[in-house]
Every structure is written in C-alpha cells, then in structure tokens.
Image 1: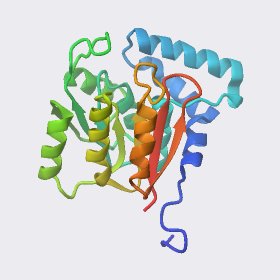
Image 2: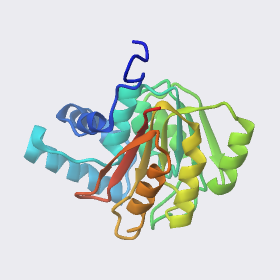
Image 3: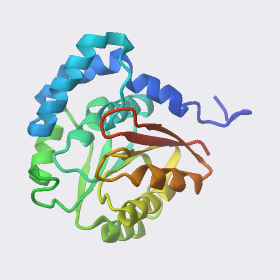
Image 4: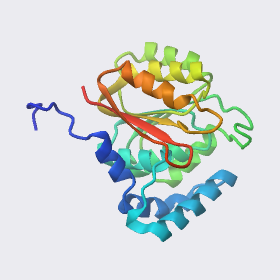
Length: 238
C-alpha cells in the first residue's frame, strides 16, 4: 500500500498493546520462557505469568517489557534492534525468538551485581540467543552508553532501527540522555520501548518519558502502569 491519505504506518500503539496482551502471545511466551536461564526475579515472573494466565485466560490484560517486545517483534519483524541495558538477555531474547534473523546491537556496562543480581556478560547472552534460535548478527558495545552511543552513531550515521529498548541508566538525567540519543535513529514505523516507568525506586521515569515523547511530535506512545514495574512504548508515525 502506498502512503495514501494516512501515511505508510498502519500499526498504532493501542493495537500493539492489544496484541502483546493477547492470549495468543502469552501462550507462545509461556511455551518457551522457562527455557531461558533463570535467576530469582525471572523465576518469580515465570510463575506469576503462569498463575495469572491460568486464572484469567483471555481476559488477562497485562504488559511488561517481555510481552511488549515479543509482540512488537512479531508485528514489525525488525531488521535492526538496539538495546541499552542487556544484563542476562531476557529482553533481547524475546525479540530474537519472534524474529530470528534480526541484527542485534547490544549496549551494556556489564556492571557486576546489577540490581543485586548476577550480570554474567556477552558470552552468556550469546548462549541464550542461540538457545532461542537466533540467526542474525550480534554486536556487543561494551561501556557507558553515554559515551558509546555517541561514538557508535558517529561511526554509523545512516543506520536506523526498527526497534529499540532503553533500559539502562535509570537516573533521571541518564535515562533522558539515552532516550534523546537514540530517538533520531528510530525508523518510521519503528518501536521504542522504555521500561520501569512505575518502579517504586524510580518514580520520575513516567514523567520523564511523557516529557520526552512530547518533544518528538512524530512519536505516539502508550503507557502501562496498573501493576508490575510498568512499561511504555512509542511508535514513530512519521
């Protein structure tokens, strides 16, 4: 279809939210989620997902970074995906499982004992991606994203991304910098995901997200804060 009257982007945020929260998507996620290496938090989430899905079935409406990324990847079939804050690779594996050919650009400091949990490094994440059947390229960019992103985009000025996740520096200034560094490189129709917008340790992230989106009129966003730690995403409509 050509651009027509409405432009070329026909995926809107509410549609993606409904897809990600659907019984179909959750059934698929729960069929492979336990194959990923676990820690205390991941184990808790897997049990919690299963309990909620079993109890409420197709009526369950819940969003977090896991089903948003899996649903988004199924919807847009990204060629290039950028992620800030990789840790154990749970998020990036959702993207890769839905689109095994995606090229991944993974930014992390690999800070030991991050959030009180293990942060095992790139080799571990590669093994997790392999377990999910990933066949695309993977580039790990190690270091502080406030330094590495600028160098990366200087070296790759024309590279754009169909999906991006910002889940690294959770300080107000740091998260704002990461968002503003990556947004210019989001392709039209691309999806930007931002985690933890209702996390009790970071109550300012929701307002930061809304302020950032308002400064970029081409982005249309959706926020989920009803339970869990919250997640937001935006689609670049033009």
